[in-house]
Image (cartoon, rainbow, N blue to C red; front, side, top):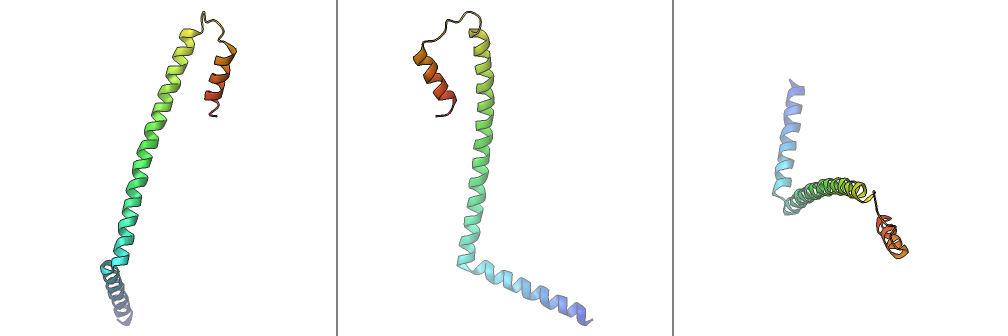
Length: 91
C-alpha cells in the first residue's frame, strides 16, 4: 500500500512540474524554437531530395547527349576543353 502511494505521489509531482514548465515563458520559447528548427530541417530535407532527383536527371541527359554527339564530333578547341574540365571538376 505504501509503495502505491509513493508512486502516486511521484506521478503527481511529475505532473505538477510539467505543468509549471508549460506555463514558463522561457520554456515556451524554447519549445517553439525547437518546433521551428524541426520544420526547417524537414524543409531542407525536401529540398535535398529534390536536388538529388535533378542531379540524376541531369546525369541521364548528359549521357544521352554524349551518345548523340559521340559519333561524328570534331575535337573541341583546347580552350573549350579547359573550360569544360574546370566546370566538371567543381572548381
